[in-house]
Length: 181
View 1 (cartoon, helix red, strand yellow):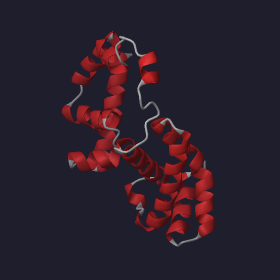
View 2: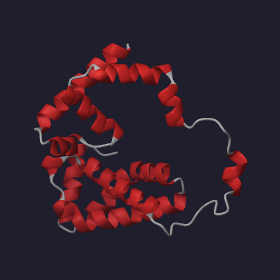
View 3: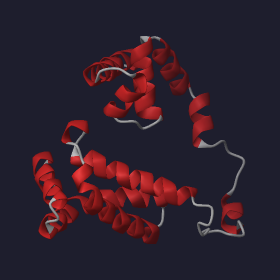
């Protein structure tokens, strides 16, 4: 994948409606974005559709990209992620297992991943370590990892300076590492 500076140049080219810039941006970022969409949607055909729609959106909205709000790849990843969520929430989405036959065949009484985490010793240890963090560190880390927000989004949500949020997350992670280590 191209470096951040090159992606900045390419998105600026897209904003000026330079088709070669879009083509190069696609070649540089599509594999990563397609992998994300495929992981989220678990269907190659839907992932292909989402990627196509997202690159149309990037082309149409490249002039709205603001470098001071984040990296190009972060911006494009957010577009893909949000579009995948829209697809997953769509009420008319076709079901891969409409009658539930496949799900029933694989169903068992075992607890799901979240239940296993909550009941595990590691989960309890992590919860205890999180309680030891200062309120702002704990909140910044929780927003980052449990709600998948970027540093900029956390700063907006907490109405705090971006630099402070980055420090809270970094220091909080160092304290968690020390506590868990």
